[in-house]
Amino acid sequence: MADAPFPSFESFDSIDPVAPFPEPPAEPCALCRPLHPALVPADGPLGGAAHEPSPSQSAPRRWRFRPGWPATLTTALLLPLLIALGQWQLGRAETKEARRAELAARSQFAPWLLDGTAPLPTAEALAYRPVEAAGEYDAAHQMLLDNQVHDGQAGYRVITPLTLAGGDRPQQILVDRGWVPAPADRSHAPQVPAPQGPVLARGTAMPPAKAAFLLAPEEPGLENGHWRGVWQYLTPERYAAARQAANAAPAVDVAPVVLPVVLQLAAPDGAAPGRGGEARGESVAVAPASRTAPQLQPLPLAPLPPDDGAARNRAYAGQWFAFAATLAALYVGLNLRRRP
Image (cartoon, rainbow, N blue to C red; front, top):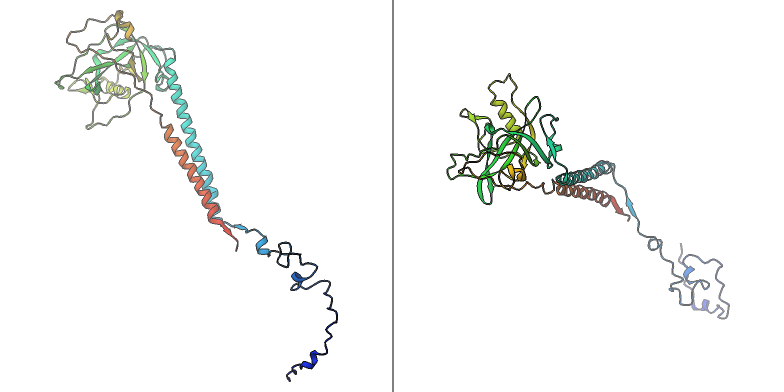
């Protein structure tokens, strides 16, 4: 193909300088549209009114949420479980708080009269209630609970079984009569006489003590052929087992039925004035005690548990709810992606 001849200067002389400028087309092309006279604003082709942003600038950035089925299945199973565990812990806390409020209100109840003719109540029904027990003390099976400190001094709690009046089968309740100091010679336990004759013991029914840590096993019952007088750990259940073990004739059921609580007297023997000890929790003509016998001292009632674990249950509930929130945040955060 031959090269086109380059136009000479004479060819430009044939152009008419006064010829009119051709009219622009009615619909300019895409390249000429920004410079079209009808579309160019007064402030020029770069003005704000004539500027059209690109589609990438006009549309907001979009996010894409496409979790996989393993993550979705795991979250669907674990999230309701974590929430349910938190609600369960809250329910336990509310139950314990309601139970504590009920026990605190029991101190204002009327005394529960115990005798051998009434059905045996449960520990749940008697706990922290005022109680009156009519019967006679079983001084032969009196016990001293060791390692009891009062006002910085070591001593014993004096626990005397009380046989309830009436009934075909003997029923007993353990009575916490007070505290006595330990003598200098611990090989000889103090002798604390029990009131004789019918008594009406008044006090508060306390739940059994929790299991104690013992350095050596302690077998309840007889010790060298005699009733064990000093105990390291005592509950109504252990006392009942000891009476069964000490029974010389197992075929004859003579062991008493023991109530599952301990009656703590309002005040020990002779702590308050009154005929026969009426003001301090017993109504009985007490035989004159020996001058050498230690004097019983009152002990305060054991307080209710601080919160029965309700605060701990609420802390556990907060942890379960935190786990649920973390799982939901991870599920959304790890599966949410910004579109390119």
